[in-house]
Image (tube, rainbow, N blue to C red):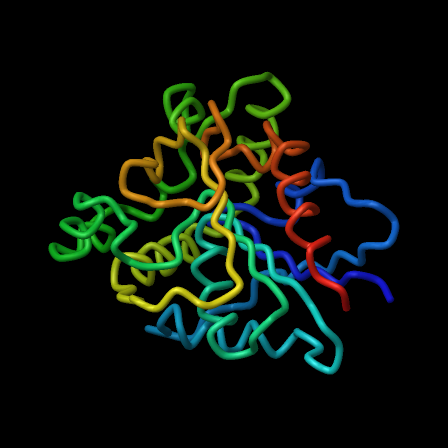
Length: 220
């Protein structure tokens, strides 16, 4: 039986961020693409609707990147996958830096013009962890193609998220050079030395190997 993995990308991104995460042929990869959020919908409620796309009649794994990791956490609490992998993310709200929480308290994301979410420069690309020209080009294109209204909604969800429960059978993989979610606020199970927030692409082989090693522990 193929090892079925559902993948959820990060905020402002889509399935293209996973294109270097290449698995052996006995893996079946299914991307959970974004759906349109309801007005004022919470992260938990959105995760529940996104989970409708998952076939629970067969064993499955979850991979969530950044914001997608928070969604994967909420899905895992309800559907009990064989194992859940978070990449450059956090399973609990305490992993968010204090300044994110402060921004949420003053509703800073509501004050930012939507047009600003489509702008990025070299400083922003470095902040995201893009190192090579290929990585910079992909990040720029992802931002161009992103929906600023969705980003603004998702930022509100993240800043209001208060989950304290870490699901069982979860592996948190984090980079030591992540600026978006600094590792000092986390206790990851696996660290990728020098990995930035975009390490799912820039350190894809290391991340993939960590996931495969964990999955191979299970006999389905």
